[in-house]
Length: 337
Ligand SMILES: Cc1cc2nc3c(=O)[nH]c(=O)nc-3n(C[C@H](O)[C@H](O)[C@H](O)COP(=O)(O)OP(=O)(O)OC[C@H]3O[C@@H](n4cnc5c(N)ncnc54)[C@H](O)[C@@H]3O)c2cc1C
Image (cartoon, rainbow, N blue to C red; front, side, top):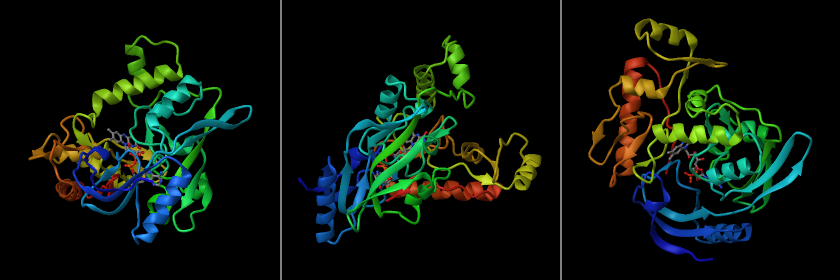
C-alpha cells in the first residue's frame, strides 16, 4: 500500500478545486481497501471515500486519508428468462459500464449515458437522467462496513432510494464503502424515448429503428450540447435538485408567473430549479473565477482558480434569491466536503 502525503486534489474533482489530502491512497482490491481502512483507524482519522470526484465540492483541505476507489470488474453473475444480473466493481467508470452494457445487449442503462463518475457512487444519489434512475435497474450492492470491515449486502429497499437520495447520504452516511453493484439488466429492451429531446434527436439523425446504441448516441448528443465538459470548465453537473412543491402553491405561482413549468408527481408538482434560478437573473453571471453557466443555470462553474467556499457562498445567495422571489427552497445535490 502506497500512502502519499499532501496531495493536491485538483485533478481528482471535476470542479477542479485545489484543496489537498493529508494522506492519499488508491485501492484496487478489497484487501487493499481493508488495509487502508485499518491504517486510517490506527491514525485515528475518518477516511474520505473518493470515486470520480464529480459530485463533490471541496471547501477545505482534507485532513484525513482520502481513499480513491479503483475496484474493477464487470461480470454476469446470474441470469433468468428476462434478465442478466451483472456485478460491477465500484471503481469502474460509469460511462464505460454503459458502453459495455450496450455492446453486450444488456438493456436498461442506455439513457444514463455519459454521466461522469464511478459505478460505486451511482447508488449514493440514485443517479438519474432522461426518465431512468439507478433504482429501476438495481438488484443489490455489496459494501464494506468501515467499523467491522465485514462485507454486507443491501437490497433496493434497504438502500431507500429517492430522488437523488439513498440511505448512504443519510443514516448510513460515511459508514460504508460500496465495493460492487449488481444490476438487473433486460434481455429484451424497453426503450424510453419520451423524455427530453430524445425522440427529436433520433428523428433529426434519421434513425427510424430504435436500438440501445441509437438511444445512447442521442443522449450523448443532447448532453454534449447542453452541459459543460468538466475537462474544459470545472463543474459538478446540476448543483441543485429540482424542488417538488405542493400543487396548491404551484397553482398560485402560475397565476403570477404564467410560464412557470411544473410536472405533477405523487408528492406535488416538480418545478425545474434551472427555471427558478434563471428567473432570478443568475444565468451566465460571472464573479471572478466562478459563476453560473451561460447555457444551463443549474450548473455552477469554476473558470480556473475558483475556491470551494466562493462556490458555496454563491450557492447560498442563489438559494436565498429563489426563496425570496418564489417562496421555494432549493437544495444542493452536490456533497460539500
Ligand atoms: C457534467 C456532469 C454531469 C452530471 N450529470 C448527472 C446526471 O445526469 N445525473 C446524475 O444523477 N448525476 C449527474 N452528475 C453527478 C455525478 O456524475 C454523479 O453523482 C456520480 O454518480 C458521482 O460519481 P463519482 O464517482 O464522481 O462520485 P464522487 O464525487 O467521487 O463521490 C460522491 C459521493 O459519494 C461518495 N462515494 C463515492 N464512491 C463511493 C463508494 N464506492 N462507496 C461509498 N461512498 C462513495 C463520496 O464520498 C461522496 O460523498 C453529473 C456530474 C457532472 C460533472
